[in-house]
Image 1 (cartoon, helix red, strand yellow):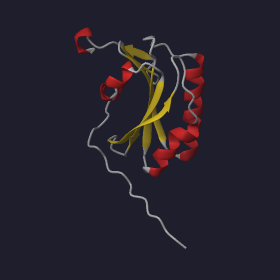
Image 2 (cartoon, rainbow, N blue to C red):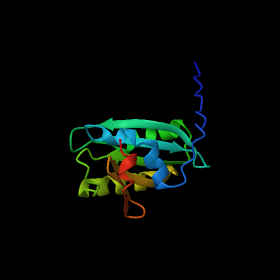
Image 3 (cartoon, rainbow, N blue to C red):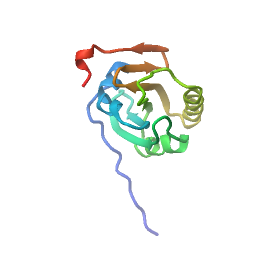
Image 4 (tube, rainbow, N blue to C red):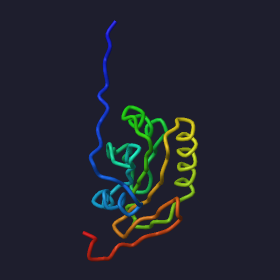
Length: 144
């Protein structure tokens, strides 16, 4: 019999205290030319363990299953996650499909006992925060 030990990743030291901090962490990725999904894996102090790209799709959609979202979170012993995906069109409004995916992820997180802190849609114009239902548009001079 062979035993393989996993090394649990340590925090990067970056703490996520608000949706705008998560957006700042992924601001550069907001300009991707296709829809992508990232997961921020968090420890109990809301410090980032890992920023993971879990799906890369097409111009207007990416397919992402809960098992892919939570696989690394389990391996990282994450206490919680924040999911983030971009809209290359710049529109921040969530689609019906976005809302359905978020609902499934919330249910899966409940079952796995991994907190799903939020779901964000990002673009070069700003971001939408699912938990608050608010849109934020940073000052234009910050947009690259």
